Image (cartoon, rainbow, N blue to C red; front, side):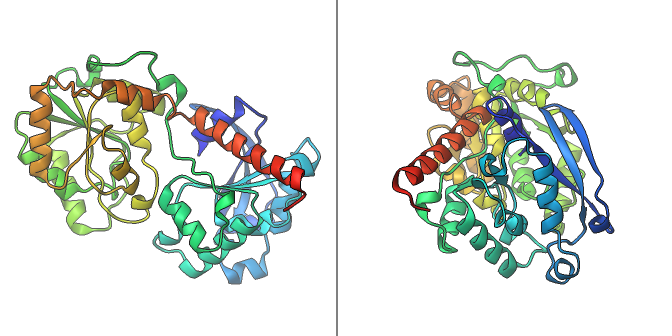
Length: 371
């Protein structure tokens, strides 16, 4: 979300807000401003009541008026001219009282998260879809869900995840780059897994895949501190961390160095919600790096990407695919395809797509005088 907001600031003035949750947040009107360096973005924080969206707390400590006042106080243009981009269904109350254009930008199938009230979230999604001028899910599955809760298809523009424009090459990449210093001692060929190394990865699959690929080195780049609730998957991750190279979390701006150095990228997703219905950021990172990819069927979006990657169902299929690509020198003939696709897989392109979609809807409304 911050990457998208940062890219949007290159095109229009943006005021980015995020809540800081506190058990007495309803009584605290303090705000603060912070400057992110990576990505460059100014963020205003406000205190929000912990559990603010729960019906009981919401009735006792309504937040709508407070949040609206905060937004309006920092909006330099007339409210009717300012666009509100709402990124969670829990602020439907705020959106319903906004005077200007409204975009609902959704990067998650929120109702499938553990611990939420699915009925409540579906009602909020329905309300937000109704009041929004433009609805931007990041995947086809979330778009289909919004249609099921009553969103007009004419409002929907799918905005997938992406990578930074600076990560995208200006020419086809046919070979891996040199290994960074902290992994320079690894033996090639190197298979790599990049991103959040937690419960959305199939660690049982990964452990077996490592066992059937003895000729390959495995490199994992990303955080491992998040708990995995499935005990079998958690135990498998622990075992994998003992036999493969893990280098921890890297600043986002450094990830491309690692993505580009791989002989072969692996996207071993576990098929589970809400991951399955979203959009794979790491796919777009690897797309920009230009390296061939092997992926499990744990992400619906990736099922539509054959030609840019190879789908595998078993560790043995992954091993066969890696061996075949190794014999080709990891040049599979799709280098041009990945390069061409990467030109449109940037946050800047996504921001432009959203702006153009909103402009088209507002222009049509002005022309025909219809809501």
